[in-house]
Length: 225
Image 1 (cartoon, helix red, strand yellow):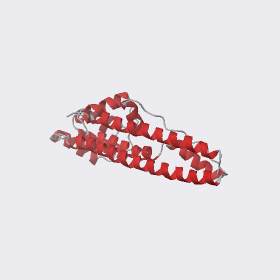
Image 2 (tube, one colour):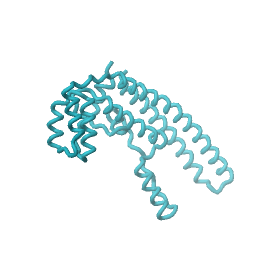
Image 3 (tube, rainbow, N blue to C red):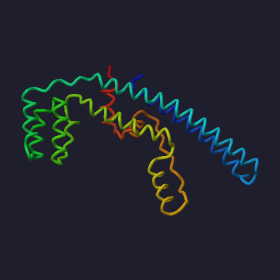
């Protein structure tokens, strides 16, 4: 199984198990809430909360480790990509641009044509563009595989993964709820559940915001070898 599909299958497995666990907990809690004034009901509710919290933590710990291991496998693939050394002419172009106090977007675009087959030079060109407040996206336009582009995607997946494992509600609704509580008292809005995914493309759209074309590019590199 490919690395991207392995990650997706594991994430979906966790997603489905958590959904079932939460649904069972909410159903039992709803029943107990009907008898909230009962001492027995309060004791049962405390026991239910404790049992659910323990089961959820065990599930989270197990799948967090598995998913992080799979991200490490993706990173290992990227680490084996070797960028070729730039030519003397390409290095001279970069050095000349760095020495300039002012460069234009047109000049960077022209330079990119002779640098595009070097991922290292296109990354350097991107840094020069940022220094001059020019938006160009040069690093991602290299015709050579640029490891840093894929490392960034994997990093984004890892960042999103941490919040996704902790919460089955989306971040926006939680932030809105926190704002409401802070400024208008303790009244809470219902938290919106995360949208579930059912395909590997939907999975990486959730974690890294990749569209179909971006996922195809990512998969071609990450799933090779």
